[in-house]
Length: 109
Image 1 (cartoon, rainbow, N blue to C red):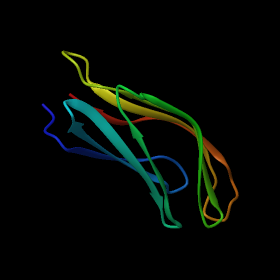
Image 2 (image 1 turned 90 degrees about the horizontal axis):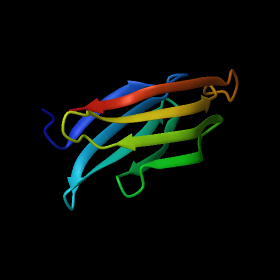
Image 3 (image 1 turned 90 degrees about the vertical axis):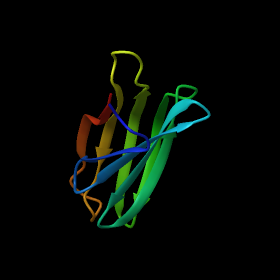
Image 4 (image 1 turned 120 degrees about the vertical axis):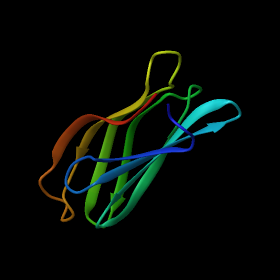
């Protein structure tokens, strides 16, 4: 059973880390995912049942680029676990070697 706020870290690609914190706001589960790398803070995305997806979001830190094609949120309800999934691509810290990713970055129940 998740206790809120619930926090989970996941490695995306090219040393970019996604840290997702899920909390209860006005009775709803809300997730805030922060993207960081050694190059710096890339940005954050907030999702909730009201706005469960975000598409085509681009973040930059120095020469490093992170393109989120789709990030989606599903609240934990009944026997279904909550989850945040993300897909997109990112360069390394020099702006090269673009690599794609598609993964679940947080899960709670």
